[in-house]
Length: 182
Image (cartoon, rainbow, N blue to C red; front, side, top):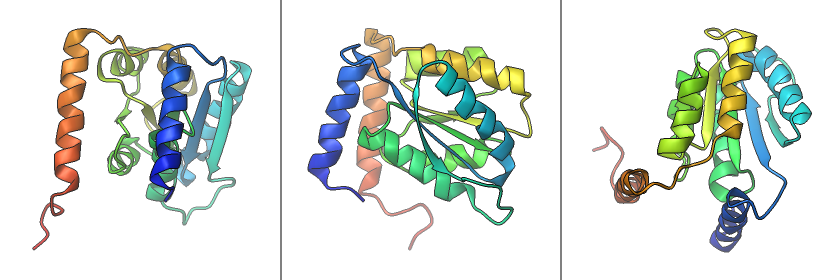
């Protein structure tokens, strides 16, 4: 875990980049074994499109690795401001989404089409895209990824209002006991 001051500084830097005050855009990317082939391609696409890529792993195929490890690493990079956006590849995209959304400040969604990928950013300020390598083809994944990295949060009042409710609920639940805990 990083110190609060460092996280705050990173968030401020990420906000400046979103406003266009920096040219570089950093994308954190991670995968488990099921998403490995897709991540290899996604890293190439992102680099070709001019993005700085922070590959948090896996750095090789390992059938015994676990998606939460890479999901947390990507989500923490985004939530801390070390990355502007995150991409996680796994088998279905579902497990990665569940794990990433446990990190406060991460807003992850599994999207397997370009509309959901850009609309999630524009309306919901989604900052982590989860792709299921076993359910999406390479071209559809490329299109969804391109839509995700090219989209910007609209900032419209209705979207700001809804996002504020989500953030308030996240803050409120952080102090609550985990569901099912006694």
